[in-house]
Amino acid sequence: MSASSTAPVLVCQWDEARERARAIRYSVFVEEQGVPVELEWDEMDAPSWHALAFGEDGTPVATGRLLPDGHIGRMAVLKVARGTGMGARVLDALMAKAAELGYSELILNAQTHAAAFYARVGFEQVGGEFEEAGIPHVEMRKRV
Image 1 (tube, helix red, strand yellow):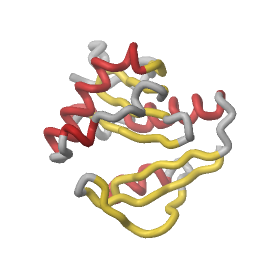
Image 2 (cartoon, rainbow, N blue to C red):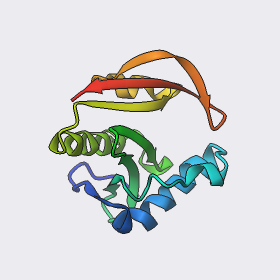
Image 3 (tube, rainbow, N blue to C red):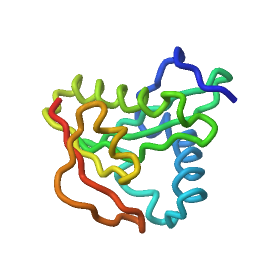
Image 4 (cartoon, helix red, strand yellow):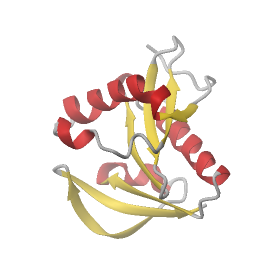
Protein backbone atom coordinates (compact mmCIF):
# COMPACT_ATOMS: atom_id res chain seq x y z
CA MET A 1 0.00 0.00 0.00
CA SER A 2 1.50 3.31 -0.96
CA ALA A 3 0.51 6.65 0.42
CA SER A 4 -0.76 9.42 -1.77
CA SER A 5 0.33 12.99 -1.34
CA THR A 6 -2.62 14.18 -3.43
CA ALA A 7 -5.54 12.47 -1.71
CA PRO A 8 -7.48 14.91 0.47
CA VAL A 9 -7.39 14.67 4.25
CA LEU A 10 -10.85 14.24 5.72
CA VAL A 11 -11.57 16.35 8.81
CA CYS A 12 -14.77 15.19 10.46
CA GLN A 13 -16.61 14.46 13.67
CA TRP A 14 -16.12 11.23 15.65
CA ASP A 15 -19.28 9.58 14.30
CA GLU A 16 -17.76 9.62 10.82
CA ALA A 17 -14.15 8.92 11.84
CA ARG A 18 -14.69 6.35 14.61
CA GLU A 19 -14.18 3.04 12.83
CA ARG A 20 -11.21 4.13 10.71
CA ALA A 21 -9.46 6.21 13.38
CA ARG A 22 -9.87 3.48 16.00
CA ALA A 23 -8.28 0.90 13.68
CA ILE A 24 -5.21 3.10 13.07
CA ARG A 25 -4.84 4.07 16.73
CA TYR A 26 -5.25 0.48 17.91
CA SER A 27 -2.55 -0.72 15.51
CA VAL A 28 -0.06 2.04 16.40
CA PHE A 29 -0.66 2.71 20.08
CA VAL A 30 -1.97 -0.57 21.50
CA GLU A 31 -0.28 -3.18 19.30
CA GLU A 32 3.03 -1.44 18.45
CA GLN A 33 3.64 0.76 21.48
CA GLY A 34 1.94 -1.32 24.18
CA VAL A 35 -0.41 1.43 25.40
CA PRO A 36 -3.10 -0.21 27.56
CA VAL A 37 -6.32 -0.28 25.55
CA GLU A 38 -8.25 1.33 28.41
CA LEU A 39 -5.96 4.40 28.17
CA GLU A 40 -6.43 4.74 24.42
CA TRP A 41 -10.19 5.37 24.37
CA ASP A 42 -11.57 8.33 26.28
CA GLU A 43 -14.52 10.68 26.44
CA MET A 44 -12.67 13.32 24.39
CA ASP A 45 -13.12 11.57 21.05
CA ALA A 46 -16.78 12.60 20.71
CA PRO A 47 -16.34 16.40 21.05
CA SER A 48 -13.12 16.50 18.98
CA TRP A 49 -12.43 17.01 15.29
CA HIS A 50 -10.62 14.06 13.66
CA ALA A 51 -8.39 14.01 10.58
CA LEU A 52 -7.94 10.95 8.38
CA ALA A 53 -5.40 10.60 5.56
CA PHE A 54 -5.77 7.87 2.95
CA GLY A 55 -3.44 5.79 0.81
CA GLU A 56 -3.82 5.63 -2.97
CA ASP A 57 -6.13 2.64 -2.60
CA GLY A 58 -8.44 4.57 -0.28
CA THR A 59 -7.28 2.82 2.89
CA PRO A 60 -6.98 5.11 5.92
CA VAL A 61 -3.32 5.28 6.96
CA ALA A 62 -3.04 8.22 9.40
CA THR A 63 -5.16 10.04 11.96
CA GLY A 64 -5.10 12.70 14.63
CA ARG A 65 -7.57 14.73 16.65
CA LEU A 66 -8.16 18.34 17.69
CA LEU A 67 -9.78 18.75 21.09
CA PRO A 68 -12.13 21.64 21.90
CA ASP A 69 -9.42 23.22 24.12
CA GLY A 70 -6.82 23.38 21.32
CA HIS A 71 -4.90 20.21 22.13
CA ILE A 72 -3.80 18.08 19.19
CA GLY A 73 -3.42 14.42 20.02
CA ARG A 74 -3.68 10.80 19.04
CA MET A 75 -1.47 11.44 16.01
CA ALA A 76 -0.82 8.03 14.47
CA VAL A 77 0.50 6.79 11.12
CA LEU A 78 0.44 3.13 10.13
CA LYS A 79 3.90 1.62 9.65
CA VAL A 80 3.31 1.17 5.93
CA ALA A 81 2.80 4.93 5.45
CA ARG A 82 5.54 6.33 7.68
CA GLY A 83 8.00 8.62 5.96
CA THR A 84 5.50 9.48 3.22
CA GLY A 85 4.35 12.83 4.61
CA MET A 86 0.98 11.54 5.79
CA GLY A 87 1.58 12.60 9.40
CA ALA A 88 2.43 16.11 8.23
CA ARG A 89 -0.73 16.21 6.11
CA VAL A 90 -2.87 15.20 9.12
CA LEU A 91 -1.14 17.81 11.29
CA ASP A 92 -1.61 20.50 8.62
CA ALA A 93 -5.32 19.66 8.36
CA LEU A 94 -5.76 19.87 12.14
CA MET A 95 -3.88 23.19 12.30
CA ALA A 96 -6.07 24.56 9.49
CA LYS A 97 -9.22 23.47 11.35
CA ALA A 98 -7.93 25.17 14.52
CA ALA A 99 -7.34 28.40 12.57
CA GLU A 100 -10.83 28.15 11.05
CA LEU A 101 -12.29 27.74 14.56
CA GLY A 102 -10.37 30.78 15.81
CA TYR A 103 -8.01 29.05 18.23
CA SER A 104 -5.09 31.24 19.27
CA GLU A 105 -2.77 28.47 20.48
CA LEU A 106 -2.28 24.77 19.89
CA ILE A 107 -0.87 22.39 22.50
CA LEU A 108 0.30 18.81 22.17
CA ASN A 109 2.14 16.17 24.13
CA ALA A 110 4.70 14.79 21.70
CA GLN A 111 6.48 11.51 22.16
CA THR A 112 10.06 12.67 22.59
CA HIS A 113 11.22 10.87 19.42
CA ALA A 114 8.62 12.89 17.44
CA ALA A 115 9.37 16.34 18.91
CA ALA A 116 11.51 17.34 15.91
CA PHE A 117 8.58 16.54 13.58
CA TYR A 118 6.40 19.09 15.40
CA ALA A 119 9.24 21.61 15.76
CA ARG A 120 9.55 21.73 11.95
CA VAL A 121 6.11 23.38 11.78
CA GLY A 122 6.68 25.83 14.61
CA PHE A 123 5.81 23.96 17.80
CA GLU A 124 8.13 24.78 20.69
CA GLN A 125 8.89 22.59 23.68
CA VAL A 126 7.57 23.85 27.02
CA GLY A 127 9.10 22.30 30.14
CA GLY A 128 10.85 18.99 30.59
CA GLU A 129 10.20 15.40 29.70
CA PHE A 130 7.40 13.45 31.38
CA GLU A 131 5.88 10.01 31.04
CA GLU A 132 2.44 9.29 29.59
CA ALA A 133 1.23 5.70 29.15
CA GLY A 134 4.79 4.57 29.92
CA ILE A 135 6.23 6.58 27.00
CA PRO A 136 8.46 9.70 27.34
CA HIS A 137 6.74 12.89 26.12
CA VAL A 138 7.29 16.65 26.02
CA GLU A 139 4.68 19.39 25.94
CA MET A 140 4.83 21.59 22.86
CA ARG A 141 2.90 24.75 21.95
CA LYS A 142 2.36 26.87 18.87
CA ARG A 143 0.58 30.19 18.31
CA VAL A 144 -2.01 29.95 15.53
